[in-house]
Amino acid sequence: MTLRTLTDGAAARLRARGSGAAGRPRGVGQHAWPALAGLGLGLLALGPGLGPGYLLSYDMVFVPRMPFSAALIGLTGGPPRAVPSDAVVAVASLLLPADLVQKLILLAIFILACSGAAALLDRGWPGGAPLSARLAAGVCYAWNPYVAERLLIGQWALLLGYAGLPWVLRLLCTAPGRTRPARLLCVMAPAAIGGFAAMIITVPAARGRAARHGWPALAGLVLGLLTLGPGLGRGYLLSYDMVFVPRMPFSAALIGLTGGPPRAVPSDAVVAVASLLLPADVLQKLILLLIFVMACSGAAALLDRGWPGGAPLPARLAAGVCYAWNPYVAERLLIGQWALLLGYAG
Image (cartoon, rainbow, N blue to C red; front, side, top):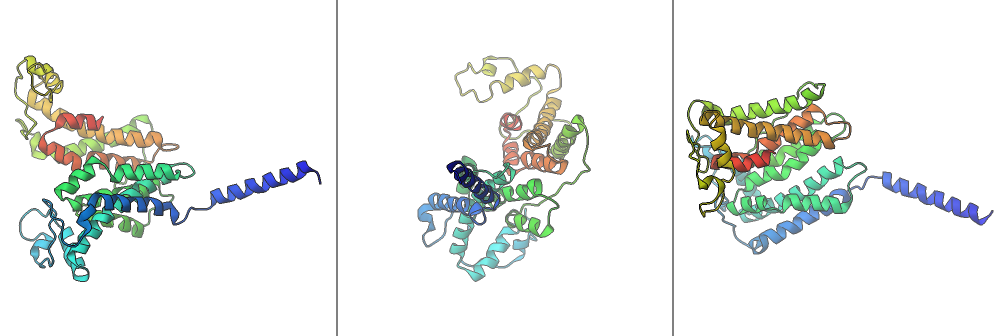
């Protein structure tokens, strides 16, 4: 047996061992490191707040014993903003101290968000994403200004839905074969606790380039019509920063030469020019509808471009609806920041 034969055999054994290791699933460690990273982020974010007692911050109010009443299931006549989240907390506080329940929920938000984003990237990456990429995706999704803002406001129920979103997308958009109802209910649990309604859209597959973008655009138009509702009638929608007038005067303010912060440059100038061609109230409604159409169709097109062989229609619709119809868009629309939403939609 020659030296060349020995080296060739050793190389073949190493290649076989490497391919076998690559083909084996990564097991628990696949989600363990991102989950630990999420736990670390939660500990850093909460800090001394993890000690005994309660964290009180605007909408986040936990009490030692929440009384069971009709308000827990939304039967008191007011808007059911805390349904069923308060009911879940009331039941959980019978088993554990309420302050401990609060800390566990807040830590779970970071763990679910970080591990979910990492798992979503890993499922869509051919051959599985490397650990560094999964950790980067998880940290960016769980540690960002949006999460910090919602946490300071105390909207923990909203953040539960945000944290569970990657797991839902991972199951609906990238799972091989049919989706099991039991698994879908499991990944929807955080959003259900937070009070978000889940909707699965299934539309027969469409063929052709126009149909690939037509259905998501139509879905965005429907979302815009549902959101604006009676506001699509005659007249103007006035909401904090959103002020449209019949004829906007042409002045130095339109190009930011009045000394103040150029918050509406060049958006007001564009509206002033466009209102010479169309009534300003019609222009306003068209802009708002355009935001939903662009956001829904754009997210669907992005997913379709990155999906090997093209994404199926249900996955594209799910991505488009989640991107165009979420609490962030609703909040910015209520504030009237339509110019910001145009950039978001693009």
